[in-house]
Length: 340
Ligand code: 3IO
Image (cartoon, rainbow, N blue to C red):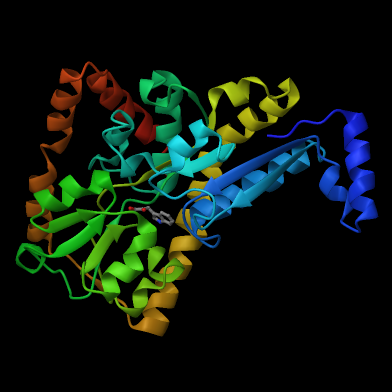
């Protein structure tokens, strides 16, 4: 962060002007850096760009946000520590990549029956405000959202449990136990590593939201999507709390206003533009096939995942977390955010 008084801002503007650089670059009096681990065209990065633009506009140019997609400033695994160390002012990471560090948040990534990213995103944000999970201590959460419930996307068709048995599939950390329960051989890894891992044969597919078929060009090698929605992946953009505390009150107000909007904005973009466009492209240009799951097979898969929520509540309660209350509230909130 870089706050200047107006005199030094003028001096900087003059200096930049003398160098022939755009004077607008020096007009802001707060500059924030914002890091994300995946490419600019992916939906979390589209969210980041929208947020940056809106903050600049609603602060009348007072705040400038410099975005760093593609892991150029921080990668998936060092995102949150990087924010604490001050490498970036804001970092967008996935708590689902590290359920041990973000245990309460991992509750939204259980098979709880969300039907869209919009619904899960709004539920996650409401839960986070109500429960103020300790796992975000030291951070100010400025935006939260999720993927749609993920689908198995694979090189060979998965029509039943036998097709899936022992298949090397990648997921976010929270998706690993889901794939395991279904009988696959899951591997947890960040999304940006997936294309290469598919091409080298380390994995035969992934379980996540379907826009990755286009946004990571995975449809070139993954030709099948099994029509069985599973679990969402959570995202949280954070600032270091101490840095947040020092922001001007009017800037904080705009950021808090945006925090209320981002779950719905991002969910809508992902559900209603991003995924549909990617599926249409993959089906048309890459002969992607959507594999149906027979009703009796679906019932068997559901049965394999049924105890996960109860097991999670037991495990988290044992760690002293308000897991039962969190899940109870999740199931009260989710229907309120369902598509009417
Ligand atoms: C994701 C992460 C970065 C960019 C695009 C993305 N689409 C879905 C995800 C979530 C993810 O990493 C996962 O494991 O499902």
